[in-house]
Length: 231
Image 1 (tube, rainbow, N blue to C red):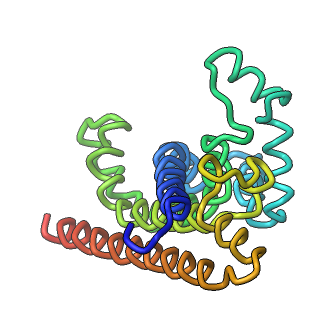
Image 2 (cartoon, rainbow, N blue to C red):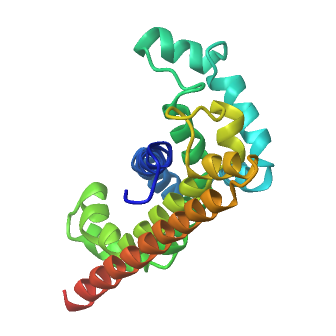
């Protein structure tokens, strides 16, 4: 963290933590939803698709407000989780991770859905005719084929989480050391006279992290694709 103040280093660390947790928690759910949207054939599928993509359409502040209503300490879900499990979201880093996961979810699902739709169903049917269960077919046939799409979706969600601002600041505020992520720290720096240098440094760090994530995902996806072709 050379060149960063303790507050800036904390904001960077918190952003990485929030983005990482957001992706890890939402990935299994996103994969399940992508499978349903890609392979489902029931009448209400359009409604699920609309709900999944709603965070892309709504202003981030509105999404943050809805999260506060639902997951705040007085909200129905937030009150239950606090009483049952001691889990608090509002004005905590966990809330920042929740907001980041919600905002990145549509991008994750879309990437994985496209990968699933590109898989030839005949390959899965062939495995089923050999006696493999649905779970075995998914694990041995579908998942390896869609893995590059899963990685792409995870990276898109991670990048979105790293840059999320509107929903986060509405839901968990901008508390240094607790909920202040990189975008919030950049915003704070810009409100202070002479803070342009700090804001520029933090913006550069954000770009470096995002580009590094994309390059890493591209490397992993290429390795996975090469392994699949060689199998």
